[in-house]
Amino acid sequence: LALYGAQCDCLLDDTLELRDRAAQAGVSHSFHLFEAMPHGFLHLPGIHPAAREALVRIGADLKRLAG
Image 1: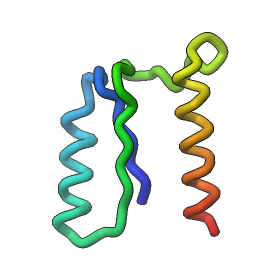
Image 2 (image 1 turned 90 degrees about the horizontal axis):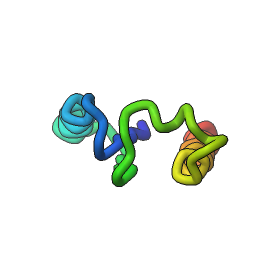
Image 3 (image 1 turned 135 degrees about the vertical axis):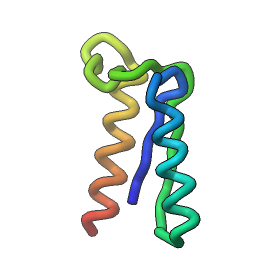
């Protein structure tokens, strides 16, 4: 399980709760926090370098998880 959060996301608390519940349940997971990013920033890869970098990271994680 790979989890991601954006630091300025209005839903970050929910993501952190999911991360904590996964840990408590013994579910193997990773978590990455994208600092200073708002909710929905992944929709802006054409204008925001951090969004492009995040999508590359997420893609690499998905490839790794898919084996």
